Image (tube, rainbow, N blue to C red; front, side, top):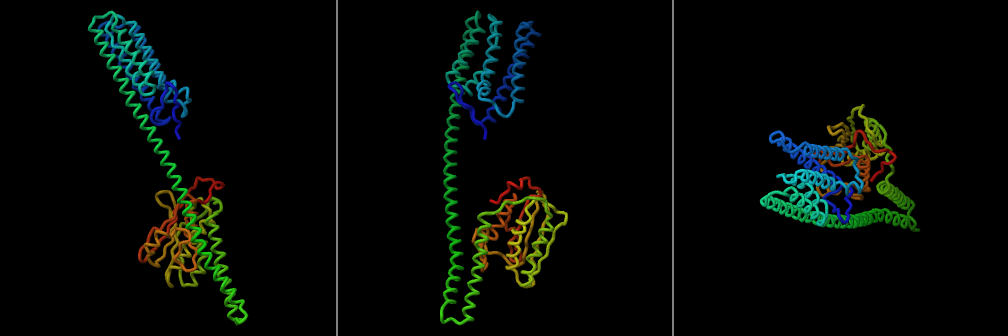
Length: 436
């Protein structure tokens, strides 16, 4: 976050932060350099044409030009941070430099028709932009004094011209100060509103998190209640004295299956709620995809579904192999369960133009209903009998922890494709990488 400029009794905070302050001061310095250079060129041309002013005038302006060039060079090469003292000093550089130049030159030219008061344009603008109204008025008064110094000893008309210049300086200084002050107050109001919006956003996020936790807790309680109720009723039935041994064994089998389902549900929930650290290391995508296919092939054979893989053996990336295997296995098992006998689940990986690797799990089972598409990544949402509803949520956490993501890329009547996109090279240190 950019540091703001400190406010003192004579120094007002400008619009924007430190970066804008530096840019604005560079603009002022550049304009002042151009102003001094223009006056110097006019004086050189005047000396060539009319033999005046004297060399001392040109020398004074040359020194001023050099001093302003040095300040601009310093601004361009100063480090990213400016101390408060330097920030307070910068506006007074142009004010002091130009005032000294204008006073010196006007004093050398007393009784002559000069226009050195033009050098006070930038100091007035700088003071109106950076300083309080009292300091702006003081700079305007100094500019007015320089106007009359240049007209000293001349005709009455020259005094009238100097008076007109002082009116212009006064109006310009006050008007610019009022405009900038209005912008400054508007910015303060905008920042206040922005902070209030940020606080409101944080409150809404906190409330949404609480609501999400509540929904998750209700869903989890519902999922746990069913197997617990089945275990309780099965055991109660099995323990009845008049129960036949075969029926009692059937009740015990039901209780055991429900206990296994309850254990799987709690294990999946712990994986979702407290994921382990991802250990990033160079791995071949071919090894990972082939391993997932081999693990899932037995389940696929039981339902008459084929699994095929397509991946370049030389494709290597930084990822946690075991976690990506877990995410892909969840997708592949879902695809197998959705397929009919004789269909094929395809597992493929390829490098794309963005420098990331996309892994596709494709099946021809059919289109996912629109109502389900909106919720498929919600924890504990499932349309599969016996499913925990956490497989896709866990897979998404794993993908995002690797700097990637997972999404339903294709959803057509005869083609469904889930894709995981991962960075080919992950700059995150393995010791710091966690699942979100």
